[in-house]
Image (cartoon, rainbow, N blue to C red; front, side):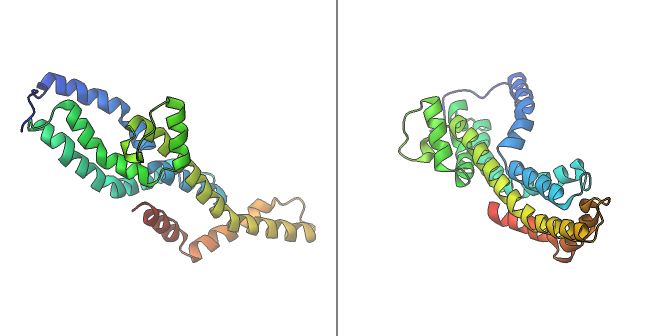
Length: 214
């Protein structure tokens, strides 16, 4: 049976849309795979020793397009279950929000640790849920951010290891031959970049990230 509440008028819809646009950047950065992708890509650039190449704009653009690729099915499902019925007058605003956020909550919970969820439940003093799906989005969102930061730092640490070994080897060689005045990082940087290119590093890193998100 159709909902008895009326659809918001055009002026009110514009106000709601403009309000949503103000928080959209924060939502896009924090509640999508963009968070993990940007953290890992910046760690990778630091591990390579290339402080400004690729630039921040290039890394952010790559992460953004990869995020769109991953999150597109979730956005489409949220639109079909929430916004579209609301526009047609079949759901009230509260019902549309509840139904529209279900796909997003399901996606976020896939990558959220139970310990982080338990922390947010404790901090917000929310009632203990029967399952994680019963939690509100405002509880799941910060738990997801904590989990993604942890995952991003773990992947970044693993990426650092092979390049750190190259730095140690080059530093040992330069010291043993008496090249004290030459910074080891200047010698190791070409070797790290060459190794990364030879193993097709961008394909490996991006492919592994996408497979962990899809």
